[in-house]
Image 1 (cartoon, rainbow, N blue to C red):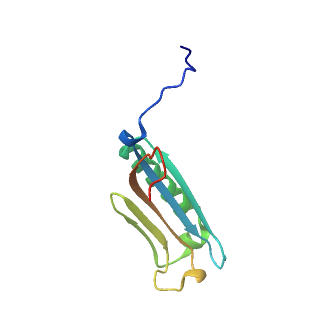
Image 2 (image 1 turned 90 degrees about the vertical axis):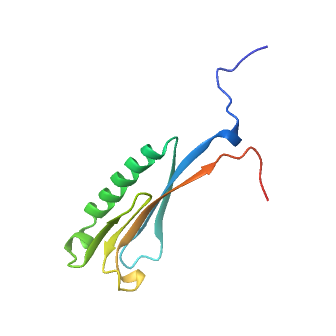
Length: 108
């Protein structure tokens, strides 16, 4: 019996933490959406805080706004400028963590 050096984990027993990062730029038709997977909730939360802060601080439009916001929750962070303005006229984003189980086959 030969081995390839890779370990096999039963997917049904494996929980992963998915970080979704969303950012909408001022007057853009498209938004930036990215997802990353982590093996622990703690790692995902650290990454969420770092990613949200980086996007928030690197946006000149948000930093210049008088009504900017950064709302932090255990599994989500929302940030941006002027939450009362319509979406395409402001910069805003969020990061969100959700847990899920790996699937070995497609479910219905």
